[in-house]
Image (cartoon, rainbow, N blue to C red; front, side, top):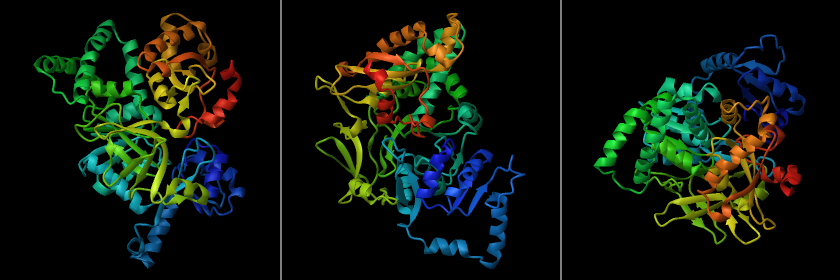
Length: 509
């Protein structure tokens, strides 16, 4: 369960999964369960491991993790081989987890994953990203998202590599610098956040550092593009890149904690192509992984085969098909067995041994998969031109002034438009430099000067998009998209249908 879930969301998952025990971190999560305990008669204990603020709680439902450990030690004395016996009695096809999907179009669905599916997925991942017990990993995937098991926890158990977690989302860069990992697993938002941090630092830097950044970043882009195309830099570019590395890229990598990184991975959703290129430009080998809760690891970049527009070739042991409608079908030992208590949805997702992903995907001549969008979200304009909202939104987010975006179109629309969230930190710094006073997010986002700033940058971003996908009109929303208001899922994916209804008047205007 995501730590920022509200009590009603906690109740739904605990109730739907028939959970008997809840293991929580701290007082905040404990309070959520105590608030809804009357609605969860199956819950026998709520086990917490951070006692801060809980010492005066006397509810019999509560138990500390230390108590669990003590009871386990006592029980082991009379049942010395119980753990080994239970492991031996288990089968690969036994359920291991129920992972709840993000629920972009309704209530989350509980996908049942077996031990075999998790181990097969992790083995496929490790085959593309070799690691061993001497490696240091850092992951910022929430435990409630299946990627934490696929790409972090289970690979750690298989290989013995040390697994680290940032203390807080806000301390990612600081914790990464402290740990100095050689393997980094972040979602698109974290990579975009790192790029935003680079851009913020350059805005605040002295003139010499800004000049160095503007001078050498194109060199990094050139070298990255050569590698994407399978070309070897000539002597001139190699020397120039060596100078750029010493003057700019090495200090940048060190500041971001990425100086020792051998592999870097992104997953969960589409990463902006510009973000992907910039991370490569500073000398970090970032690779895309494409996976889903239901299908496991579908594809990934392999060494020497990184194409920034693709999500790589199909993973080891994975077979694919693409239907006439453009939907990707997958079959492998990584797949889920069905949705918990939902045979109707299971029958739609699993047909004749193939998992229907619901994703619109192309495949290029080299066998690389190109992810477009969810099939149900692919748009068609009045002219018949097609557009992919997620693809456009990813490009829009590369603007340092745009934090989030929702693209609007449809058969009754002549062009693509967008509802945008400003990046409060970046736009705030711009306003301060230009002596534009403001008080709050609402105040800043509705200023004409800010709209003009975003419009100018949007013209630049539009240059990277196909003509039919360019954003012609936009509105700056007075607030940030909020998962607590059901506008986003807990993995920060847009709930499009809900958003389109909520902001219908704004869209129509």
